[in-house]
Length: 490
Image 1 (cartoon, rainbow, N blue to C red):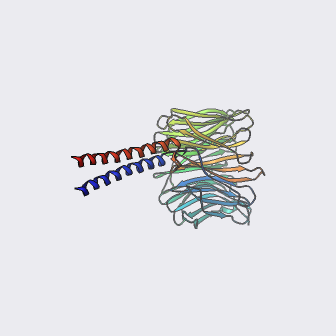
Image 2: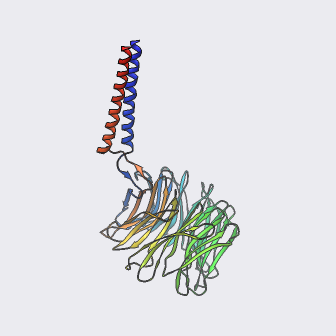
């Protein structure tokens, strides 16, 4: 039976050694420093050609980051990055003839990315509406829509996509009245063919659409209008997504109080649609968030409070049972960044986050965009301290605790984060940063959205645990050998 005892001895040694290796591997895998929430993962500070550059909008889809804006020398610019590492995958540079072109919004889906904006038409020196569809993988152009009705200025400001259609909202000059019209155009997603269009002229006044969202069988558009060039109206219009039929509209009319009455952002959730913006009442600007019944347009709830000189609410998002809005206030002497969380059903304020800004700023400070992902809320914007800072703030969505914030300047000049999105443990904000040579660079900053273990060399205490595991393994081996000796004596 000597062979049997030798086998047992061999197996005992192997088991002890295996335990030692496993414990060591666990120590190596879970040890050391971590890349924590809010750590900068990568950055792209980019200058296309020596002039001012600006990243205006971002959309994260899968493992890619899509950013739209303008490069120096007036070029329409879209850049696609790998979410991990920030490697540039492709870029689309476009203009209609050496004049200014600007991509203002972007949305991506499985196969294509859609961008909306404007370009100067050199032959007539006017602004034209531009929508471009690019291949997600390589950036090749699928189709584009250059909308130039009668040589009058027209620009696309917002874009969204459904399973088979692309919806675009903006503003265009009416060739008869020479006032601005509210414009919504819908295209076949693959061919770019126009399916339906709404051009709305508010009786000798101006109108414009600022934001658009598709939700189920409906399209919701937010913006504003004026009546006889003196009174401004907050305006929301709801359409049938297939036919373009107007289902309802809300006109929040403020009589005799100027033109700064606008809904700037819109979001939808379950049976409700939410809009954010501001109105002027008796010379004072008010933050406004309004919730509507999607079916009827009936007002469900409203939050309105005094922000003195603005800017009011400029971004909104909704998820689960909550709605989140971002913006700011300014009293002429100092500014405040404001984020608010609401109960989606009742409008009750769940929490509020504020950041006091320098008195050297103006009413263009505060949050500009906000997004929600995996229990956290991320807001992006700008605020003045010693310089105008790029600002990103992260909150616990449930209680409003600030998890981290990034106050950044590229070169001690003006810095603004215009948009933000989150996906797959990554948060990306986009905007511009002014260098020390007074050039605005395209700026994309990507942050870690959760703690990710980083493989490091074990610390001294961890080596001690590994050594202890080794000692236990040796003791196990000795115990097996002693047992074998005792059995041989018997």
